[in-house]
Amino acid sequence: MSAPHIAKSLRSIGIAAAVTVLAAPVDVSAQPMTPQQQPRAAQAPARPKPQPQAAAQAAATPAPTAAAPAAAAAKTVAADDIIARVGDTNVSADDLRSYVAALAPREQAALAKDPAVLSQAVRLLLANRLVLQEAQAKKWDQQPNVAAQLNRMREGALVELYLQSVSTPPAGFPSEDELQKVYEANRAAFLMPRQFQLAQIYIAAPKEGDKAAEDKARQELDDVQRKLKAPGADFSAIARGDNNGAKDSGDLGWVAETQIRPEIRSQVMGLAKNTVSEPIKLDDGWHIIKLIDTKASYTRTLPEVRDQLVQQIRAERSTIMRRAYLAELLKQHPPVLNELALSSLLDGSRK
Image (cartoon, rainbow, N blue to C red; front, side):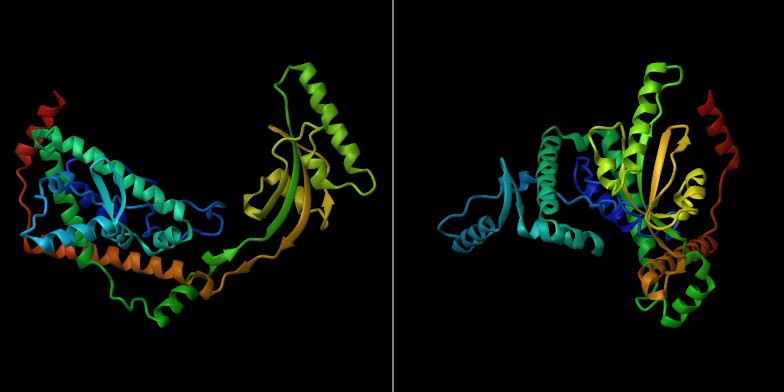
């Protein structure tokens, strides 16, 4: 379980309602992807669940009196510090600072770049607190099954947090020498395959047996080919044209050799720069490909992969430390199982 997972779990345990998640979490302990596995689009960063505060506590606080000027002043400062409010529910600047501080550096950078994301987070905090108020008003957390589930969640989160604390590598790990050795031993994993900058015109194939649709598609294909063979033909303009049946056409950007379908790759590799292929018929339709440019295969340098590699090495060391800690703990306190009772329990659950 990643750190954002745990932070969200603990915050959920401290309240009596489930907290909505903005986006799928990012597991920073994942192995670095090879160039062939890398997605072409970045994912939205995960956001840990913020810690709601019970509005009931604020409602229960007595109003300031003349005998307590300091308390009144504190109330005024707190009111000035409110970032957002819905009904009796507030989000203060401190709440928001705590929320941001709990995020991973990458997620904090995303918030800094896009104020709309921060606004969304504030709205989420308010919505969660409204849910919390309703759940507490209904004494939802006092239901036996809910209380038992919350307790199990708390215990699991506490165990995970403690295991993280005893399996975190030192701040200076790995050293530069260790990093260089791992890089050299895994250079093949950092090989970037040859890349092609492509554009395409794609005309979908009609359903088999639909003679009229087949004739129309063939006519559209012939029309596109005629335009491409005209002097000074503009491939991009033809791909974008509204007067042909081309779909999903245009610039494909840089595509790794390994990501191109074999039937198309063989044609692309035979093209000269800025030339166009003949129509390539596949099951889904016709593809006309233009090769714009080519990048030779190369191995990414250590500076290019440093952050990714450090993350992987630390994650692997953390896993080793965790396993060693658990093994030693079990060695010092050997568990004793009543296998007969356990077997009977399983037999009873199957009936």
